[in-house]
Picture 1 (cartoon, rainbow, N blue to C red):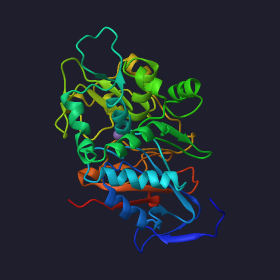
Picture 2 (picture 1 turned 120 degrees about the vertical axis):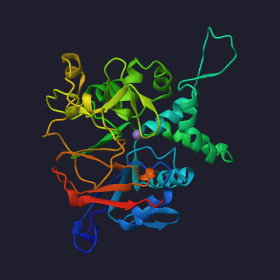
Picture 3 (picture 1 turned 90 degrees about the vertical axis):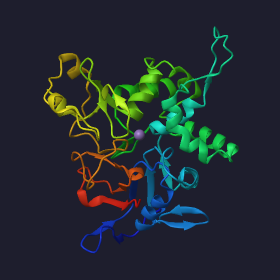
Picture 4 (picture 1 turned 45 degrees about the horizontal axis):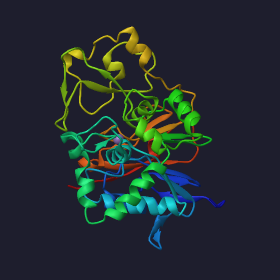
Length: 338
Ligand SMILES: [Mn+2]
């Protein structure tokens, strides 16, 4: 980006004038809400030129999960990819882009004589349902869909800048180091995708951990019925808990735990399996967690930017300018109308 003079914009209404120079506008899960994304970009001073949104001094970073669920998935993909291709944005891989790759990657079953094709991500009822909106919207554009699938595989699983980091769901330094050892960088390969057919393989753990985060199993026989209708035996956990002792210290998901499990003690194995993210590490931005309410940092160096846009929440950005302690007034958002 070129060096530039101070750029001042009114970002949260007349009451808060915020000075923004060069920097990054980090944007949470879009899930096909392309028109809301356009509104958010315009609100932040991006302009459409030659079909591409661009900002004079700043770049956008998309945290993944562009696809699935929403009404304008194809438009959202074109918008984001055009910005990335033109050098005005970065985009990392979300679990939904990984799912799309895995759903469409066939595997050789040497000892399988049923003649049925097998895929890295099984074509069962639940997985079919999750990708159905995307496949429907691309039904008349198979070549475009192929192009986007190829593009998904080029998306890094994380980005690390001098003064901040982004990942879709969870910063796991060990698995990030393992990915770099395997590939020399932050991007996956077709081999890793095929290996991830086995969820316990290193590749399976890398995709799962970085794009879906950590979780713990509920006690034997217990389940939660989520607001999305799915029955779960696992609950989502923080990757930044310090010395947690009970479930309530680690739970991080939209659906609450059953009352009687809130104070359930973590056993030593569970405590050892959980990650932490030290207060003196660079700021980290994630999406993925379906938050609600007014956007604010989770901790001074952690922000989640997924505020459930596709469920008529908000599409949220953080306007990062290098600060090492994140600030509530750097969040920008657009509400999604039903
Ligand atoms: Mn996600």
